[in-house]
Amino acid sequence: MPNVAFDLECTSPVAIGVGPADYDATPPFSPGRAYPEYSFCPAPHPNHAYETVRETLRLLGLDAARFGTPEWDPLACVVVPGDMVVLKPNFVRDFRETHPDPADCLTTHGTVLRAVIDYVYKALDGKGRIIIADAPQNDCDFEAVCRQAGLAEIQRFYRERAGFNIEVYDLRPEKADKIDGVIVGHSRLPGDPAGYVKINLGRHSAFYEINHLCHLLYGSEYDMSELRRHQSGDVHEYLISRTVLSADVVISLPKLKAHKKTGLTVNMKNLVGINGNKNWLPHHREGTPLEGGDQFADSRWVRRLERRVVERFKRAFPLLGPIRPLVAGPVKGLGKRVFGDTNRDTIRSGNWYGNDTTWRMCLDLNRILVYADAEGNWQDAPARRFFSLVDGIIAGEGTGPLDPPPRPAGVILAGFNPVAVDLVAARLMGFDYQKIPLLRCALENHPLTLADFSAQDVEVVSNHEGYHGSLGGIDGSLGFQPHFGWKGHIELETRGVHLERSTV
Image 1 (cartoon, helix red, strand yellow):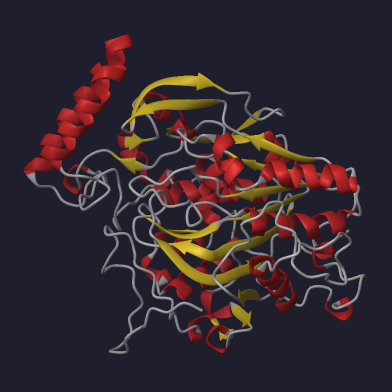
Image 2: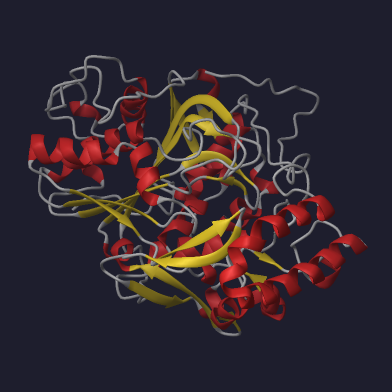
């Protein structure tokens, strides 16, 4: 049995592998070299991203004694033959809001997925299951994002070359049909073939301490009453994929991006995609700060007016029936002209550093993944094994997570604790974890602990001198632009030293 579960004491370092900031464009993304441990034929062209993944696993010291031999098996410390391994990418959406460019900065790239699949398959020795699973945003075209990731070609490669079936699941039970961002209907989806588990954190939820404000919580859709039924009093519950909870191993494969509600999205925010109903997930509290909300960053009259107008629209819109598609676009356009554009310069929907809601939801989901078993029962120790590998080859900054400008960074991060990896990611991006509630609060004492260590305990190994050593020693030279709602409130204090933006 592997000796690694969730590394709650951070006994292993976090690795940062650095390489060229480009992906192989040709599915199934085979490596461009005949590595000793690779049992298939390599591709006839370079695959730099694959090479950086391999280098990052080496940097962690995994199976170090056999590196460079056919027996090197870096993930054998977390995967054993017969395991069910769930790979959780960030497949948030298949398109960017205002940019026609490819989505390489938006979702986990197929090259990174392929490299991890190869090493998981080796550790399984052909016995077990590999499942790629995610519940992306409610308007995502899952087939399109799978095409972008080259999943069909990867599946075909493994069927034909190894006789092995790689499964791909869209965990959503339904998809929202939208026009200009306005929900006009829903389409049913197959969902998780294993079903879902309802899990209540009760008094262990991060929302319990703000129960007096839970009547203001807003989820992903207009029906706030549904969310309030699941976030009130001693009930703070979520609908979680049974496939994920049944896994022996979960490997998180997030994209390195800035985020409008949490500052950044890496491993901890990535768990939004293990849910069966996104309207159970609180994203902000309706209203201005003076009203107990975090929907807006200020309490000016125009924001109070906007709240009232939008509330009335959301109540009336479902009653419009078949004419909803006709009015959705014009109404959304009018709202932008009157109240400002969320994608450009206007803070609403909790898209700012004062969001006091989304980080709580993320902590709850992470505690569920660590401690809840396949039936939703709480365990005293981690219920499954975990590994993280972050795709930062081409990352996303600024208006993330849905419309980020690409940030060629050429990095892969890896480790056994999601909090530790996210702390390193924040520092690498030039962000101060103490200014990010999701990270700061993840380090606090809790009965369902996520991190039995301090930020000072995190050690980093890298093939880049500036990223090697203690967490505080990372120079933060990538200097990501934060979302405009976080700008000036998240960056590292440089004490007069300018953090130069650079690509590596």
